Structures are given as C-alpha cells and as structure tokens.
Image (cartoon, rainbow, N blue to C red; front, side, top):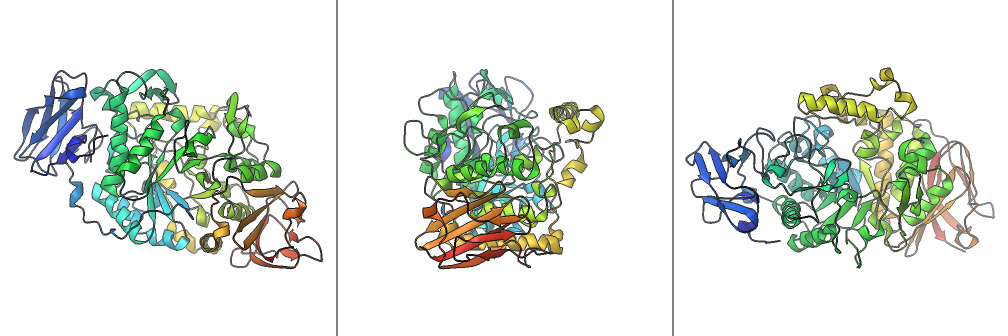
Length: 627
C-alpha cells in the first residue's frame, strides 16, 4: 500500500496548502466535487488517473469544509473515505485535519501482550451520555479494576442515532452519535496516560443496510458469487479485488495512524472469503505492522477454531495475535444455565468438556458439529494459549439472546463468582464485557435506528429468528422480544454506574479487582505462552486447574454446581498438589466477596488436598513446596 500522505483516499489537508480530494470510482465517466459553503463553494470536476482513482487539489478549501461527490450527474453522495459525517451517513462529508490534535502520549510504549486483559465496551451505552468524552470519565475505574486494554465495539458511522456498530457504512468516520474525531483521539490519549491500550472492533465482511454508498462508487466492492449471512461477500478475489483490498488496508492503517490505536479486532473473519494462496488477512496484518510506529494487537472473531489464524508460520498462517474462541463460553453456559438450543446443541456442558477446553484452548478440533452440519475446528496444539481469547460474556453472547439478558441474571451469585474466578485464572487471554465486573443489572439488547420501512423488517426478522425456541414459538410470545427500533430498547442497555455502590454489586466488584490484581502480580496466573494448559475434571461438577511459572505453582479448584468436596480425583498422581506446605490465597466465600459467606474448608489430612464447598464456589491455593 502506498504510504505517502498524498496517496491516501479521502479528503486531507495538503502540506502545501488546500485540500487533496481523492476517491476511487472505476466505472464513473464523470466525477464532480461539490463544496458546500466557504470561499471554495462550487462544483469541480476531478481528473481520472490510473486504476480509476480521481483526484483534485483545491487550494481554497480547508479543514471544516463540507463536501459531496456527484457521479455521472447523480444526486450528491458522501465520500466513501469520509473522516466525519456531521449530519449523518446520508449527508455531506467534512474535511478533517488529523495532525491538528495535540497528542500527549509520546511516552506510551504500546500494549504489552503478556498480561493482556481486554474490556469490551459499547460507547453509546457505556456512560450516561453515551459519547467518547463520557467514556473518558470512567477510564480511571477500568485502570483501578486491573484491565490492561479496552476494546471499543465498532465506531464507524452508521444510520440513525444508535446501533451496535456492525451496520457501519462510513468506514473511516467515527460516528457523530459519539462525538467528533478529536473526541475519539482524546479518549485514546487519556487511556494511554492511564496505561490502558485501546483496541477497535472493525467490520470488513459486510456493509450496513442503510447508507452504504461505497458500491455506488466502486461496483466491484461486493461479489455476488459468494454469499454470507449479510448477503453478497466483500470482493477479495474477483475482478477488481485489488482496489477493494487496498481500500480496506488503508482503512485499517488509518485507525492506527490517525487515532494512535493500539490494535484492531476483525469481525467475523469467517465471512472474508479469499481464494488466493495467501489469505488477505495475512497481507492486512503485515501492512498494519509495517505502518505502525509501535507494537499492535490484532485479533479475529472466527467461529471455525482455525489454528492458522493465530499462527505465524506458513503455509496459511495469518499471523494474528489472537482469536475469539467461543467454546469456553458455550460449555460453561450449558453447564451452569442449561442452554441447549442453537449452537449449544453441540455441547454437553460436562466438567470433562470444560477441562479439555482449558487444556486445549478450544473444544472442537475437527469433530462433527450437529449445529453446523459439518466438521468444525482444527488442532490447537501449536497455538499458544495466550492467543485464545476467552470470555463468559461478550456483546454477541448477551445481545443475541432474545431478551439480552446476561449470564449472571440467570444463575445464582455463588456460581457467578465461581466462573468469574475460573475465567480470570485460566491460561487463555480473558475478555470482560462492560458491567460484568459488578454483575450489572442492565441487559444488553439488540438495537437499531434504521429508516422506518427497513426498521420494520429488522423488527420482524428479529422476532422470527427465535421462533425455533419453545419459549418464543407463538406470536404472543414473540411480542415479548424487545423491538430493536424502540428507543426504550437502547435506553434499557445503558450501564448504571451508581449501582456499583450497592452491597451485592460492590462485593462482585471487589472479587474482580482482587482477581485481576492477583493475575497481574503473579506470572503463573497470566495467559500462558505454552500451547496447552493443565486442567482436570474432578467429578461431574468440578474442575481443577494447575498454573505454574518459575518456582510458583497455583491450583484453582472450581465447583460449578451444588455442594461437595473436591479431592482432586482424576488428577494424575505426578501432578497432585503437594502435602507439605500450601496456603489458601483466595476463596469466593470471603466476606469481602459474599454477603452471606459459607466457609470453604481445606484439609490435607496427611494425604491429597481436599477442598469442601457448601455451594458453588472457587478457591485459589499456592503451593509453597511440592513432593
């Protein structure tokens, strides 16, 4: 990808003065620039160059100028590489001067991959005002919690006033619903001052259903011979794909370069279909790293459990730093909440499945998936555990439920404490979803603000989606599913930060802080660079995990259902905890974490360690000597 300023798509102030306008429209016979207001007001013809790229330098234009394009005499359209859409995705674009922002993060060295703990948030519902500036106010809370990176759900501009962000159409423009571009820069700058990295979720596998003018400029952008859940696939290997690949690459690099972001999470990469010998994602990762001044974090969301995504070496390796892997979540939810429909049908929810997932990183390594009707997964034995991103909540696993309820809304507090402890001591990289650290009462529901006719189709489709679930199989029952187009659905999803002071929420928050600070302090409890973990099923309702680094060894015992004693049955004799000296580091039944604690009893008794729980819970033990 060309690297000079003048080679970039969009409208950017030129070093010699004025604004350089550049757009790709390979099939256009004539392309006109319309400048709205100011001394340069008027309509200008652009010159066509190689590869269908049109450009023009307008000396009288400057930052703040509003502009549109007219293709072959059609109605004015916004710039597909617009840096800001002040009046929404249908209105004119605005020239932005990214170099004018005064950064203060020169000392920031970039994110550390070891010890990474990711906190996913949706800007519109994270704070009371739902803006970039509103999110800044809560960054100290996240620093004190102990996370090391925040991950913003997509911010590329979308139709309407509220959206999850996966309906983005102005891929270079932060949504005006959240603020101006410099507000996003201020968020990143402040995060760096607090020692937090910032990752952005980006969507390259489809465009949103309203305001997607990009194909009007480049008819080759979508390829009908491939189909995805969102319709035609983005063209990565058909005629004209070279400029599509360049456009996406420039977009990714622009987020790193113009906003000092520390990394990207690529949405649904299983829908990025590329028949080239070297997959586009490999080329994209290479280009991003070549243009980044500091280390970056690159993660993918992909349902296939592909080892090549998180592997560096060819053939076929994408070289990313991690992949979202859902199996840990699915096994746990089946185990503690009983879900069995949809993709949960592929899981039994046993302690054996959970232990295998903790050993391998994911469960499916090539078995038949009844839900998908095909083989799913690949061997994970060469993938470092740190490159597997695991969670017990994320936006999809909450928001794609009919009512948007969180897992802790459906299970008791003791079980929530147990699975939280398991997540934050697992050998994978943990991801939290906003509010889970205090067991937030608010759901995270699916919401949109599309034009009325399209909105009605979305509402009907949303309710029809759950007809296969017995509890929503009748028309009356389906009416209970929140209307995505209703403002109340969006409002219901806003976090209530003041509830953190309530005793029950404060107790959960205290546990999360303690676990995260312990994870930070103890190398043995961070994500592992080894390609396998040590975890064992110790009965039908219990798993035990061994974590070790240097001279430190920890055992985590998690009972996920009912009361009982963990005697480390199922643990190979040569891996059993030693009996000479050990200490209890933490239990989920400490008064600081539970309003009605039931003491956890631990006893070696001259033999293997036994830990007794009066209900679901977890304990972390440190061995100070081993046999």
